[in-house]
Each structure stands twice: as structure tokens, then as C-alpha cells.
Image (cartoon, rainbow, N blue to C red; front, side, top):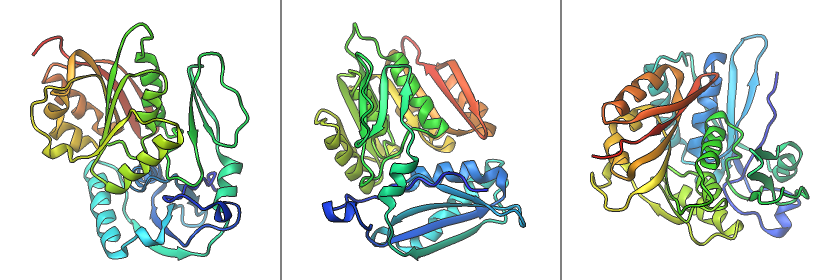
Length: 320
């Protein structure tokens, strides 16, 4: 059984290459029990900024999750060590990932752009936000904001459950009669920051620890005609514990351990009574995250579980 393969390159293609063949790619694959495939897929997508492909072997019962990245960006030794570390974290979180096998291989060039065209699904969020590829002729509804995607750019599609939850909450929280600000912590491809700026969040800031992610997010902002999004390379764990700049909404699609450890830094950047969207959390870890945020005054407004994942919207205390 094969899930639809959708691949996004981490570099912009030249005009000639965009219609013929991509540069050299490497396939990074993890073979694991099927109960862990969605968790592994989500982490790989977030780590490398690419959508994943999943292949299930009927004879062994194991699932192989793969992403494709530019070979020039892959150091096999470093990447393998990082993957082992992340798999151990998932295992410690209660998810059975063993016996996990890691494979990093160069693959022949092919027309990934055309594959992307065939399989990408347009996303309509409550009639207020339309996420579509650049070649799509679909017209937005009256007043609907549009986010454009390009196959030559690394860009999350918003179709994963955790990202889609964030998109829905950003749209739901936007009030047309007021000025609102947003901070995207761990922006990755920039899809959430862009999807906030498009419907009218007037101050949008985003950061990521990964320099490559910041470059990609910058390119994606340019593709969407946005120069108002303030993108930075920052490490959440090293941000000042206090901040004079505060936001109406904070979006944190991050690992549970990081959310718990750095909850006070996130709290310091939210206005009294503001909202925080927490996603990227394994369902088995969500209660710990909710409890940690409740300890500093946050109240859960809603939550959603899809397969192994649970995401939530929380309200910050009115004071303190």
C-alpha cells in the first residue's frame, strides 16, 4: 500500500530545470512499525521541510517513511546521528518505533515538479483562506486570502493534521475589526506566518533555529508578495525570559518536551488574555503539555486528536 507521494525541493529550480529534471536528490528513509509511521512522517516533514512518502511492505508489515532533499544539503553522518536521537525521543515518549532502520541514499534525477503538480490538493480553510499551487486557476471566493505554493520551493502544504489545525485556528482567531499580531515559533517553511499575514494580521514575526528554514521562509514570503513578515534565525531556548514585545496570538508547532521546557519564554511573548496554538504533540504527551501550561495560568479552549497527534488552543491569563 502506498500513500500519495508529494515531494518539495529545498531549492528554487531554474526555468529550464523546472520543466525537465531536478538537481541531484537524496532519499532519507526510516523503516518502522506502522503505528509509528505518522509520527515519524510528521517529524521528518518538520525537520527537512518536505512532504513525505510512506510505503508499507505487506510481507514484513513495516512502513518506510521517506523524504527527498537536495544532496548538497545532506551530511550523511550528521543526519544519521540526528535521526537516531529523534527516534529515541519518540520511543521515550511512549511510541514504539523499534526496530527502526535509517537509510540515506542518492537517487537519480527526475521530474519531481510534475509529480507535485499531479498530487497536490488545494486547501480551503473555512472559505477565508485558500492554499493553492502557483499554476492553479481556481479563483478565491470574495474576500478569501490566497497562499501560493511553488514546486521549486520547500514548503509544507498544510495537509498534515497538526499544520491544518494551526491554519484553522489562525483563521478563526482573526477579527477583521481589530489590529492583531502573531508570533510563529519554529516557522519552518513559513506557511503559518504567511497564512497569518494574508488574512490581515498586521504584525507578524517568525523565527526558526535552522538557517535553511529561514531562507526558505524568506523565499516563500517573496513568492506571496509579502515583505512585512519579520523573519529571524533564533533559538527558543536562548531567548530572553522577559519580552517587552507581546503578541495577540502565538503559534508553536513544536515537540512536546520543548514546549514544556520553554513555556515561560512563550508566555512572556503573549499579551494578557491572548491565545497560543500548540501543535505537533503526540497524543500520549498532550496531557503533560496541558498540565504544564495550566500551571502558569493557561486555559484550554479546544483540542483535537487525529491519529497519534493532538493539538490545542489555549487562552493566556488576563494578568501576570
